[in-house]
Image 1: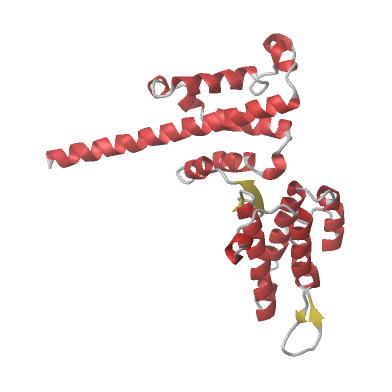
Image 2 (image 1 turned 135 degrees about the vertical axis):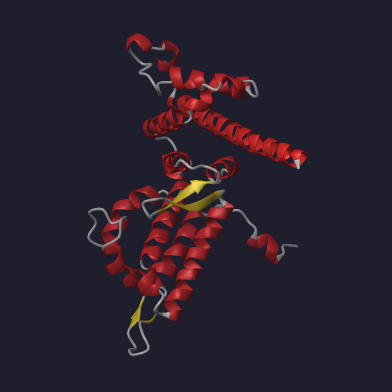
Length: 275
């Protein structure tokens, strides 16, 4: 027998059906605009004016124009398309907060829309993250990255770590290379720390090898730093290697954070012993 909790807990497989549900909430569900009129409107209509002044607009002249430009990316009813649609709707709904919150029915519908988006992301292993530019991005859940970022003082590094997890970056080798270079430069003092290297030498060796041989710090496709074996790697293999490097660099940062915590603990121990 199938129970209700089985249905609610099911993983998402029909991406187009979920997209259409979100579309219905945003574009088709109607409510009275205000207590002073009988005119009905939608979340999309209420979001139009705020959207035109939002950071996500680009050169689009309306929400429809923006949606039409993005449509090819979700036309295939893929997971990537659904995630992009979630990202777009979430940002539009949030940018219209000031307008939507004046109407109880609109606020209730916005909460339902954003709640559905969060649940879709939860079931697909993703989440919404807000970046310094004020926009929200869908990223893959990564417990280590989240743990590392919360203890970072370097905001530029934190943004690079977050962006690498963005779902839309899958397959974008060039942007991943740029981000790995940024992260690599930021953690260079850690990578050169000989005492820290003793704790996990293999990870340190992997990071230094990848940064210097996989076309990140140097041009390894030609010139004095050329690595012929790298040139023969497929795009898929390069991306796998880049993802492995990213994971290794997170470990280095975490080991460094652990050492800092250990140092503080040692000072506390000594102070308590003296007391």
